[in-house]
Image (cartoon, rainbow over all chains, first blue to last red; front, side):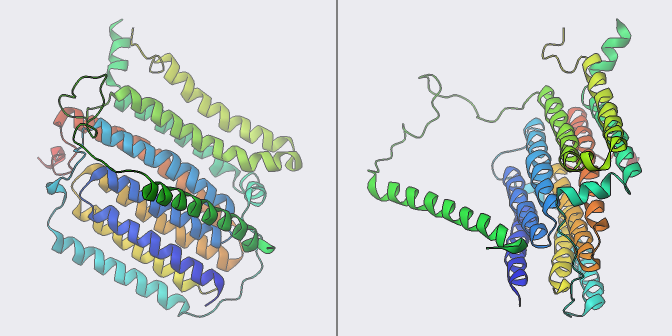
Length: 172
Length: 123
Length: 99
């Protein structure tokens, strides 16, 4: 095992443990905080994979914005802050379906490389400059489409979360 | 400490030192302080009155509007970082691309402002 | 590098997310599990980008993150709107389309 393999095993163990806590904890707020740990450890894995910009974007978007939004939603839906016992559905069918899917996925992915060592073809680290050059040349059209998607999300979220806004306009 | 992982090893060591400092400071505090807990000390302080009712209230939906506006514009700003490193080299076309991107999102901000969701009181 | 570590990590993470979506009742926790599954997919994209020596996979993962942020914004707004009419954030109560 090389240094990167040891690092990724350690970070992966942290990420998996936190993910299991997200699924099993009885307290909704703690599930959100465990999600921070899981996604943060994944950001570390991205760093090991030399995806620098992506790692920091993960911290900024997921840990900084998405989890904050989820905690806001917990507060807004008056979720119980303490333990709540009715969080789970029947477990057996879910574990059968999910476990089957996961085993199949792991088998397919493991079969693809069979634990072999792959020599790297000397790619440059995915820092801001390298990714910027790619995004603003080859990926310019998807980038512009993203702005329309974000606009649609903004308008849709306003329309859904503040229905009284539209009604008030029509009456006046 | 050179190479790609080496530069991040410096950061990792710094993080470890910071964590160790935190642990040592709190352990020293725990060892040195006196400990005399009582029921009155652990109640929530509410301007001298005894707290009544629960401590978990439902927040207003208005907070959510600000939260998701922040999230969407954080996503926009994330694209500004790679753009800032390359627009000098790639020329005006890149500036125009980013201009369109920001303009479309500014339309959304304009919509929010015109609909009045940005003002706190819905007068 | 040995890509299996990353790929198996992604597969197990995806499994945990999928099981979570199936067994949790609270819609917000279901959302968190969807995020776990999206992140597992991102991890495979970044791993394949590293193996192939190309940045395209990283850019795809970047775009997936942005789309996920938009999805969370709209999804949580829908959950809150359901909560307002049903006074509950449980996915079992949002069964209006069933009848």
